Image (cartoon, rainbow, N blue to C red; front, side):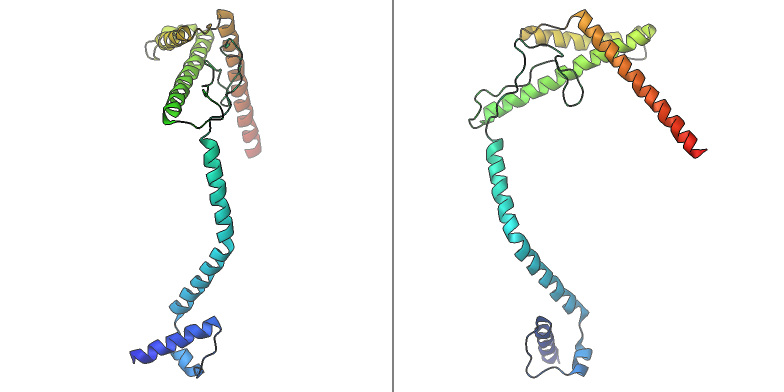
Length: 218
């Protein structure tokens, strides 16, 4: 019985492939040995074949493009142009933060990156992130002090004065070690005022949005 079933399945598969069957399978036999799982498996097989025939060339192209991209990534790019000497806060980064240090420089643009060069560059990026965050935190804390002087020494909020002192000491030491002139008091106050204006606008916009939502729901 098993041999008969195997033969019928073989012929059924041949029929699905469009091959001639000799002798043909009787309709009654086909109804008797109908196998939905076999039909589904063969359909999946056909789809897989179509996929690979369709995707093999793009896949090869993708591999070549990936290799070319990796070669580009492993080459030291040109360093970003910045003012000499560097001016703290001369621009803002992609996150809207004042920049506290120049962007890390690649020593030999056009040459391959070595593990040592990549590690040194990564450390400089971490230092840049820490310095940017500290500078913008100092501006934010001074802005809060301007809005609410009594909160500067509040025992349950840091206090901001101590947080500011710690961050500012880190910045001053970093700038001093790199011979970078720190921002003046006037520059800091200008950034503080800009921060408070932006904060006021965001809050006003938030109130306006709430009022608009309320009017729509009425």
